[in-house]
Structures are given as C-alpha cells and as structure tokens.
Image (cartoon, rainbow, N blue to C red; front, top):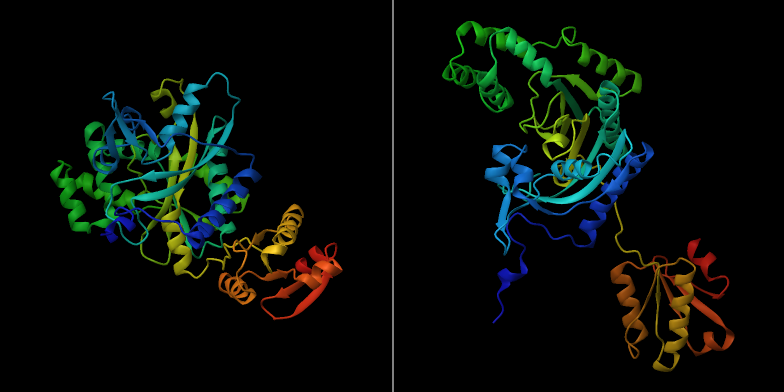
Amino acid sequence: MSDKSLSQPIRGARDFYPEDLAVRNWLFDKWRDVAKSFGYEEIDGPVLESFDLFAAKSGDELVNQQMYMLEDKDGRKLGVRPELTPTYSRMVAKRQNELIYPLRWTMFGNTWRYEKPQTGRSRDFWQWELNLVGGEESTADAEVLVIAAKAMEAIGLTPEDVVFRINDRRFMQESLTEIGISGLLYDQTTKLIDRREKISQDEFNSGLQNISLTNDQIGQLNSFLQASDLEKSPKLKELFLLLDRYGILPYCRFDPLIIRGITYYTGTVFECFDKNQGLRSVFGGGRFDDLVKTFGGGKIPAVGFAAGDVVIIELLRRLDKLPKLTPLPTRVLATVFSPDLFSDSLSLSLSLRSQGIPTELYPELSAKLDKQLKYASRKGIPYVAILGPEEVEKKLVTIKNMQTGEQKQTTMEGLKALIEN
C-alpha cells in the first residue's frame, strides 16, 4: 500500500517543477548579468560546513534557533548553511595571500533556516550573495548599493516599489555613547532598536527602562531615532553623495532604525524594504571588516549583501511583474510515421539539433500520427515535423505550425529558416 505523504517534500521545503525553475533561473540570470557587468566572478562552496564557522559570528538566533545541525559518523558537529557570507569569507581567508584585491566575487546557493513557513518565507531558500573585498570604503559601499539597485531595475522593481534604508553601526555607536549608552548596555539597546518597528512605542520605552536606561537617556534616544540629518556622520554623508552621483538616490534613505541583527557587521548596514506592504524586509547587507580575520585570515575590509529568491518572487508576483515564461525548450517534435521510417525521423532530429533547434523525437515507433500531434499540442510545442513515405521519396519535410494549423513542405536546407520565421 502506497503512502501518499511520501510524495510531499518535508515542511518548509520546495519542489521546483519546470515552470517554477524557469522563474528562479530567470531571476538569477538577470542578477548574474548585473554582477558580470560590474566585473564579478562567480564562486560556490559546500552546503555543509563546520558548526563553528557559523557559531563564530552569525548571531545567537540564527545559529541556535534556526540552523539545521547534525553530527557526522566521526562525531564532528556540522551545520547546514543558513547563509552564504561565512562560507564566502572562509574561502577568502583560505587563499588570502594569493588573491588579487579588490576582490569581486558573487555566489548563488541553497540555504536552510528552521523558521515558520509563511508567505514570502520558506525553510529552504536560495540566496544571491555579492561582496567587494578590499578597496576604498565609501566607494566600495556605494558600488554594492548600486549593484543592488541595478538588480532591482533588471527585474522591474522601481523606487516606487522598494526602498534601501541605510545606516552606519559606527555612527550609531558614537551617537549612543554620547548619551551614556555603551558596552553591554549598547548591545542590549541595539537589540531593542532592531525590533523597534515590530513593537509599540510604550513597549519600546518599557524595554529600555528594563535595561536600566534613565528617562533622560530614553528621551534623547527617541529623538535621535526620529532624526534624518546626515551632517553628524561624514561617512554616511560621503556615501549619499556617491549614491547621488551614481543616480540611484531615489532608492535610498538614511534610517537610524536599521541595525542588522547579525553580529559581524562593522560599518555601513542597509536593508531593502517593500514600500507597498508595510515594513517588510526584502534583503539586506553591510560592511563586515573583521569576518575574514575570524576565519584565520588577516583583517581586510569587505562589504556586500545577500538576497533570497522566496520573498523577491512573491513580491514580483504580487505586483504582477513576473514575466510570462515558457519553460519548455522544445521547438520541434519530430514524429515517427512508422517503424520503417524511424531512422529518417532520427536523422531529422539530429540535423535540427546540430543547427541549434531544440527537438524532441517521439519515442514510440508505432504510435498514430494523431496521438503524436495531440502530444505536441498539450505540451505547447510550436512545430511538428512529419516524414511520411512521400516526403522521404521527395527528400522533403512537412512542417505543421501548431498555433495556426498551417502545413508547408520544405527541403532539409530550408527547414531552419521556416521554423525560425
């Protein structure tokens, strides 16, 4: 007796049927083209890494609550990667002295997090990671933000759809230190700031009181978080001037509420938000100057971002900006008129493929032509090639246009032109 549950993926995982994979491939091809236009090379790494690689800097929630963990047969503790940045940084550290800087690498990979599956979020998701390692700080920060903007443009998302909210952790630390918030108190305060938009003002103030901030400190902090003045941060001011010169300022705004919960960020941080559905984060990134050093390399500046496929595709679908894609590559079905003429149909299919025309050869030798035509119609194959005794004798091929129903006879030499027109 069969168990129907075995035909289902595990909770939070996804099957990619041809129509689903066509969307993901379209998205990643667009992003690959953007990355290549800026000179980025593509890399890849293992899905399984040492648990310690992620425990070093990925943050308590990500490592201890969301990461899939296992032990191999030798008792080594491993983690299924919940993000790509640690793997990326480890690979830089491994060959740090051999690489040429500034280093422009990008990668695409499957990642897993044990989260509650919901709209725009899955336990199994694919990420695009892009980082610039080395180089001047503000210009490097600007470059990755420009690439992020161009990636949004490439898939039809405009400043009317998304916004990049940008901050700087050093600016935050300096500003909070001025009002007496430092050390452990700073860490506790920034965790609350990171949650600010998910809780009420009263809950936020109560949380600050619980970590022993005075009423005066709470008032000064709230005033700072409502400000939008860049004058006190020369680095942010310089960055926004560069973003203006690049022509992407409409995508960008300063926001002191952006902290990024992952602990390895050291400077500029940013998140892309959906402007039309509340405060939903689409992707994010920032500067991580110490991460390569954590994995055995030297200190080297780095900045980048990672974007996932689930929320982006859901956003495009909701905005009706997903293209109508045809996953089927087949242009021609070479029919088999009879077993005696199979070799002729086989030769035709080989000839068409050698000319760059994706061609299927019907696999049954004795199937009626009507059955083969119905197959082509159901699959949406645009052309059917028929080789009967008359065609073979005259060295012709009958081509049927499945959309119009029109049939034409042509020579082997004229076949490609007829199909492509």
